[in-house]
Image (cartoon, rainbow, N blue to C red):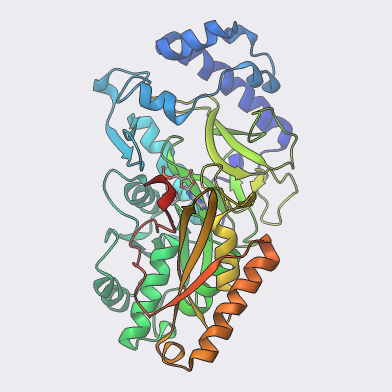
Length: 433
Ligand code: DLL
């Protein structure tokens, strides 16, 4: 079902007219209310009156995470604190967190966008939704929560963790939809297997997963292990949280961007020059309607492209492929660009190894080395050394075929790699320690 048929199926021309009107109003507002944006625009000799068509957005300066940090915590808010009703923050691995604020209207918009997202995944008011995204400063928990309630579904606000209880509640309450990170969904599947519970005995039918990259092979793994359809959703706190782009269950191919509220651009990942529709580069968003914390040309560091093809679901919004990498998680191993997701794709496709892995990058002299630790099951681990060697050779060769680099493969015992309850940590970069 399409939650907001009128908006989500707008003909392109009408959509673009709406985007332009909203962009003009948004730029005027930030110019008038946020000294930081005004100064940056003055430096670039551009004023709100210069935005006459959508392409003029290219005249506006980019905003980066560093800009948000420089204005920590509330410097980019456009309204007085008395109009702010919610604050979230993303932890960030280095430095200060990024802080985002919402007005009442922003929260209504967010719930609307998450209702669209869940509808696209086939969720309805008849569903029982177990929300295992973390509640707290992370936007996943509360963002998904209000969207599901707004849709009329019954929400179980369980948050992440306590996996056995998650499964107990799935059984007792008849959960039909699971919301979590994909790595946590796999953790749940493992625990179910350990407990001898058959997923087919549950009512679970759909999983709505996001907040971290996951490969197509990982999707296949989750779908077959939990006997569900697995849908990909994308978002980031700086833009609103979850609810920025969502796959439809009809196609499961590409995520529809909520273009009536967020204007996407793709720029070259090094030069930041605008790229044409269809070309791959860094994804940039401008919020068109957000009140408390609008952002202009926010550089997400996520790599994507725009897919303009008409989708069979009827939505007219452009899609983007699954985000499989960020400009800042690319590793350069002996001159070759490597994304963790490429390693994942290989591992999930090799029979005999478990879908749990970690990548360790070290430096010896001037050479970078990559070690991939992968779990194997109990019976394989106690198998003959020769068979284990064959298996690790197979993983090594497949990585070599795909990426052209040789890396060390360590097959490790079951349950040695830390399980995730939220975003999984896939890479340990010892070069930075
Ligand atoms: O992860 C918001 C979210 C919550 C999205 C729940 C989906 C579901 P942040 O913590 O700010 O916000 O992290 C945002 O996570 O820039 C991407 O690099 C990554 N990311 C989010 N969704 C996906 C996805 C939330 N579906 C950052 N695929 C983004 C790949 C994703 N990466």
